[in-house]
Image (cartoon, rainbow, N blue to C red; front, side):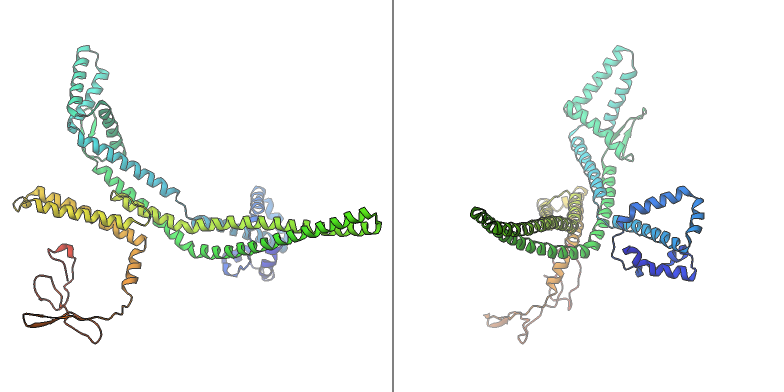
Length: 485
């Protein structure tokens, strides 16, 4: 009825002007729909009508004719309601934050990382080459088809020699072979030694690491999508939280009032019960009748208050649940952000407690810079020109670059950069005290930038090379031997 009252005036125009219902609906501006009625309740009925219409098929055409314009209006309303229910459900699903896909991708990345680390660890430990491992696998295949006992014995002895040469325990050796199969299966383009019999032994995990980066990028995009949804819904959820808080507070105040009323009414009922008992003891029939009537009235009032209190408690519980759900939705953005931070940290082999991502990365960058400086200090000038030294330095520089990239992403996610810029952009007012001292009969004045206390300004340029520039020349300090002024 409520929906009909909202839409019938509009549909009446269709009937009056003879406009086709379907054409009108296709051109209908959703903005004219002002009803606040929840249409989800009509979904089952609409679905039943639609299903029945489809089954009836051609017969429905005759029904439409028999129904006339009024029937067409009702049918149009049902179709419109069904369309709105479907659109709303699709819209809600499209804009609901879901981390299922992200968590699935994260598990896959963790699995690849675990496989890479374990394989690399054993490969670094073994003394066998990939060709020797693939030969071991060939021996396995030949033993399965060989019928000569002496040949089988000789091949098994060869395998045993390879096991001993590997430097791995039997358990480690078997695990390495198992991991080898998994590496090649997970990343088929892995560089491998291939035997004539088709066996393969992975030479490294470079392809697996490339795959891991691809998966990480997929996860990054998925999390960014979910983050965008969370941010888009944030204002709605915050407004809903405020509304629910107000409702909960109102219901809490109402509960307190009802508790007091119930308590007061219990005393009234107790008093009436005492009056009735006294009347009965005095055997005053008239007083007993009056007391019983008054007691019934007060007990009815008490029961009504208790029902109100029970309803209040149910409403309060319901609103608290809604509030909790809304807060969970608000916290979704924080959850997504933390997952994004964890991803960036994992990609550079780090982990950190919540809120400490940037600090942990900075600490690691500092450690690597110290390692680089130490490497330079312990390497003589001649050795610094060797390829080995250059490769070592490049490896450290590449790792630092990766860390700085991760740091930038984490700073963006946590909005640290925005907070820092906001702080640095604030105006600062301060008084400067200048200090003078006599040095070799000359008076030097400290640099001052206080208003009315202007002193000498640094002209810019590279420190240690004199005042060679009027302006700061720019550039990254890390690319020069001396820091920029």
